[in-house]
Image (cartoon, rainbow, N blue to C red; front, side, top):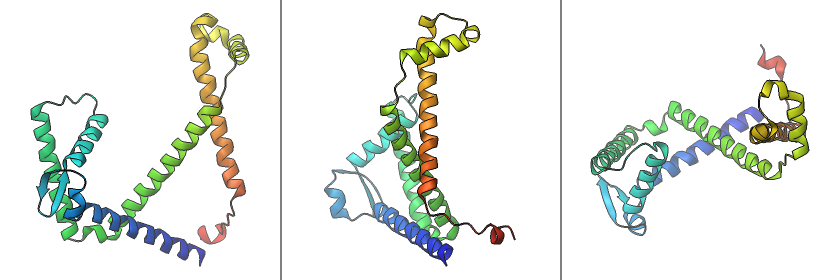
Length: 193
């Protein structure tokens, strides 16, 4: 019963996500006009200047070597139009309602949520991690032969290494605490049948 409920809950989450995604694609014209001037229209879908610039910023962020020339901007505009046409066609064919698509969205949603949680926790832990000069000196003394450099030369690298080790250990403790505080029931006998 619990597994069925969780599956239904996950399916509901996916449906809500898909509906939101679909609504974003087919936004109302009045809502779009509030976000700026329309610079691209593909059938009923309209893209404002703000939206276009945000998409362009993401593209440049994803590909830092991309030089923003007039030719590259035109290619990006063509890409946006083609992408929008493909999305509209997929929705018209109701591919956004197929189980395969819904499962893919679920996996992406879960992975993104976990990554965001991990990043937030890592940032929180990073603020609390302190590596002292005594720890650096002790590490250097223990590994001096393999480091092959003076303490002054190796200090920065050792600090980074020790911070990384402390953050990894803190993340492991946090994960262990989550597991320990959860109410987890596993029927391994039925799973292994």
